[in-house]
Image (cartoon, rainbow, N blue to C red; front, side, top):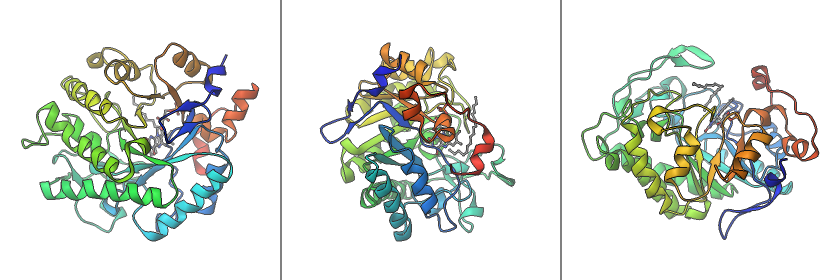
Length: 347
Ligand code: FNR
Ligand code: 8K6
């Protein structure tokens, strides 16, 4: 019933995955106070090495990208060394792992980086407070200047180079879930009137500059991207966003990325302005390898792949509850159900 998940998948000439199950990126807030991954984190990922590909928890590209406590970074030598322990542990078990590169933009909080500006596309705050630190209220960001944008693009590319230095097999650029890159892609957060705003081409510019800079540093074969055409987290939807993704996704198709990954918690959600689910919309405008995700079981995900709705299946919460998710599915062993209380510990 799930046999199609257990055949290899060739991403490109550089990378072939041993099965079609990806571990979705899962923030765990367990790095040390220098944002260095610990030995416990290495052990946690190594236990999941049977996944066709692990995508790491979101990892900040620079200090002002931080929006949650103890999220790891990839911008200091100690962080790179810490990640090397993780990637070695995964490789020793025969696994593959990409780093998810993250800047939270307006969801960042100066509490985490000693004060200073919170950067976004425009000075449009997101309402609310930081999860797990509810006393921290989100601030009104500063609209990134052209100089800021240039530096950010460089910093994504440098973090990608650092990821390869740390032994990662590639990177997934985090362009989803209402964080910095996504903030340029939606009208709710992007009110710019310069070459980064207003039109689909302009609103896609920052995302494409980051993608192109990362490709130039590490190659398209090692570069993936996650996007959220349907706004659902840290973002309000706007029917005009559709035209932005109608422009962006064909542009991305031309770049021959390793994959494009949907950013959604439940792929049964229907978006009026996308004409259906996020994955169905992405499939209709993107021609490369598509990773589906969002409240799938192995059975429903396998059926979706069989129906050609996407090519690879990412699994999030069930992987938190079941380090041996892949073996359990293959052997037909019952899964432990996920519970939010499991976030307290790295099993
Ligand atoms: C997430 N998700 C997420 N997404 C992402 O792009 N980067 C991240 O760091 C995180 N972190 C994260 C932490 C936790 C605790 C949860 C529950 C989710 C979203 C995740 O990758 C995935 O898209 C969703 O969990 C939906 O898939 P499942 O869980 O239904 O298989
Ligand atoms: C990416 C950073 C994540 C930090 C921890 C997030 C924990 C998320 C727990 C699940 C929350 C689900 C929110 C989904 C919103 C859907 C709205 C329709």
